[in-house]
Image 1 (cartoon, one colour):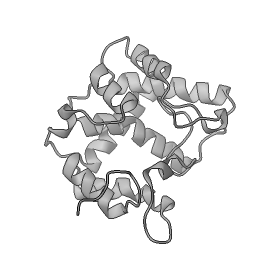
Image 2 (cartoon, one colour):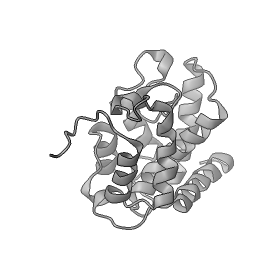
Image 3 (cartoon, rainbow, N blue to C red):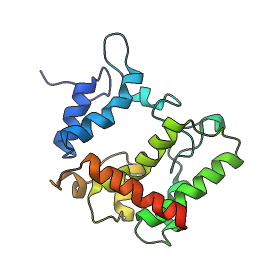
Image 4 (cartoon, helix red, strand yellow):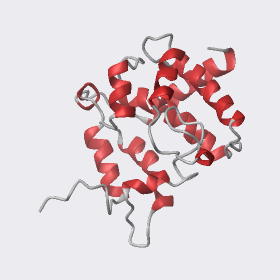
Length: 188
């Protein structure tokens, strides 16, 4: 009997398999990304998708499209924040360079709103999450509005990502992270 798609009682193995199957991630990339889920597991080894909202496990302050935890709602999509990210790309496609601009801006906004500095482990999570969509999309380092709206507003991966069999690897993820951080350092 097929499992219900309700986001409940998930295992790390199920998420690992889904990343490899649906997003064409290499085994090492999938394992690396699912490692963070271990902090959400119940004694029976399962978690619910809603558990990913737990602050400072995977969810963190200075998100692209969500408010910070101390602002009271760190999980509801904020359309204006997506528009601000697109503005950072001068209204065009989001790239590593424009993500650097968003990274800097959101960090500043978060601090100005009173969020504490992220611990080092979550700072790295933040960097990898910022570039994770470019890595998952494999659309030539560019994210158009259609992709951004599908992922952030509709919380789904569009066919252009799902039907692209190009492998997503740890190496490409780290390369994208270094690429964005280059622009953070030299200025977007």
